Length: 264
Figure 1 (cartoon, rainbow, N blue to C red):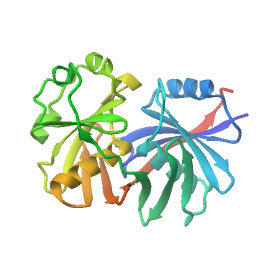
Figure 2 (figure 1 turned 120 degrees about the vertical axis):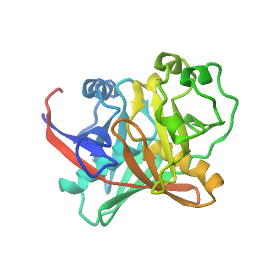
Figure 3 (figure 1 turned 90 degrees about the horizontal axis):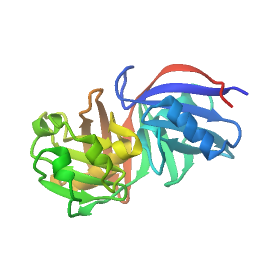
């Protein structure tokens, strides 16, 4: 049996930018170990597995090393594939059953909006070795459900980071969000995301991190809606707004290639 397989760039409106995702459309249940092997074979920050489930879809996300509880860019990519390839109707609100509950995707003209949980963070004592691993002064350190969040002094500092990934991988965290105010007026804040312990040295554009970033910058910028930029080598823009205990992520996606997965 062949499995439809799509390569999608998420949080971008052009190919070869944003965050690349592999999306597999399943027609039956597959073992966890098999999905993890596919994730390792694809060797992207995430491989998404989507399966029709009554009037919704089951969605799981795997890095090359582990299954994760929440992933924004792979959800965005999955929704784009479902609409573009006819698995969902053009005006349908897509509901995904995930390890983080039911997540919704809706089309708003040329933007896909994702209804995700807001992830608050609290001030935290930095784990030993964090400042050394980043190599810059830490203006603020907080901790959310999945990751530590660090604010640094400026966008120039953030862009110049060359972390010690081996040292970061030893820290007891899924990932590290580093952020600062934007030096450019078209963006409210910028960020980078590192998760070497999960098999991703630097993630190009991280939707789930913005569920925490929006909660953080809401307190400091005193607003609810943001235009953000993740300043990785590929780079990508994320629109995010806070609605109660939810974070609404907005972005675009581009299907770069499509084929079939032959390994059974």
